[in-house]
Amino acid sequence: MAIHERIRNHALRDRVVTAEAAAALIQDGMVVGMSGFTRAGEAKAVPLALAARARAEPLKITLMTGASLGNDIDRLLTEAGALARRMPFQSDAGLRRAINAGEVMFIDQHLSETVEQLRSRQIAPVDIAVVEAVAILPDGGIVPTTSVGNSASFAILAEKVIVEINLSQPMWLEGLHDIYIPQRRPARMPIPVVSTDSRVGLPYIPIPAEKIAAIVVTQNADSSSTVLPPDAETAAIAGHLTELLKHEVRQGRLDETLAPLQAGIGTIANAVMHGLIDSPFHDLRMYSEVLQDSTFELFDAGKLGFASGASMTLSAPCQQRVMADFGRYKNRLILRPQEISNHPEVIRRLGIIAVNTALEFDLYGNVNSTHVAGTRMMNGIGGSGDFARNAWLSVFVTKSVAKAGAISSVVPFVSHVDHTEHDVDILVTEQGLADLRGLAPRERAPLIIANCVHPDYRDMARDYLDRATARGGHTPHLIEEALGWHQRLEATGSMRG
Image 1 (cartoon, rainbow, N blue to C red):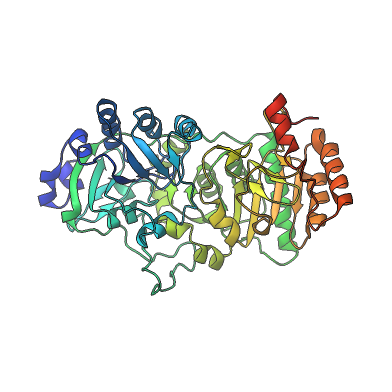
Image 2: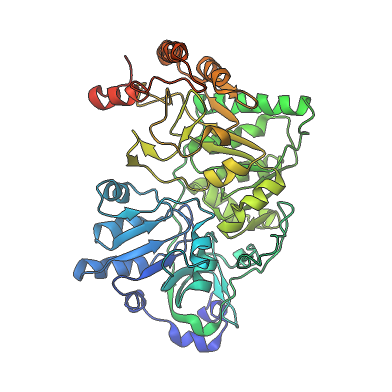
């Protein structure tokens, strides 16, 4: 397709430059907002040119995105020494090492909050935005690609915008997006999303053409998802959750269309959604952040009617299949800004069933989603907190053990708290499910031990609880032993006694 069909503002065609020339607009110390959400729709050429420049001269920026970036961009920027600060989410092993070494300051945020803080000037403003696009409209409006994330607000709030026109992103993505930006507080009106298929905004990011400082033409593809297919343990987790949902239907709290579904990124949550294919539920709806393989598997199985998200992140086989026949899905999909997909007001209104993954949880229902052994950051809280606190049903899933059984995912007390017991309704491992609704701490703990703890750790957990209960308290603990399993892991490489 000729570039003039992508850049529909004639005057802007003179602003097409190389990636190196566009990257030269980014100066040391700037705050840069880049498109991208869970390895989808990120700018791909300018960040690499920036990394090359940082290897040749001193250059450090604060980098904001929607979520994680693909194409090894975080790794390359880290290795080049270009990152001083990073927010609000990442998933790169190299960047993770730099964060845990204190070389990059990482600000872990609920994904709904970043642009709220930008809009209210609580954090430093974005100097320049770098946004991937399918096309630029005659008035300067930007049509995003496979994610929206924070791209819209970055472009609207930034002083200047660099647009990457990606020729490998198909033109039929145009019309998929619904760009709605909340008004400034305190005069904000309610967000008018009242169902998963509500269209309340524009199919493009509205900015004046004069803000676009440079345009770079690329042809690089999105990175494929690294999500693994379901296994016996994730299938068991899905089975336990399906039985709970059947129970909710029998109790009259749901019907067989359930409530809108949200699934966090990753293998386990994706597998749980996949498990609904063989369930009795039908005409399902999804209101989530990331639309993964399971979204399209549910479409293909005739189970899912509509899906709303902030990005599409697919495995290579699924991506090839979906993109080859996208017409059959397009009218059942919406991509929104993440502050809308993750907004507490909308989540509470729609009554979401939220399924997210825990690193570990404890005997009373507190969940750690982010820190290994309490100190080492993995990826970040992402959107799990947005959904957990506001969902109709908040579910956390994990396998009961990790590292060949050396680590129990259920511990006396979590080493870092991301989601307090007050925000957690259901805990599930392959061992079983604990429904915590309406239970006091002393009632929760025996249920979690019986249903969720791996047999290798069950006696240890019961022993801890018995001795803690004998000492007393509303939430019984042995303070001197509460992190004892983690201490043993650090000392010996295993939590086993």
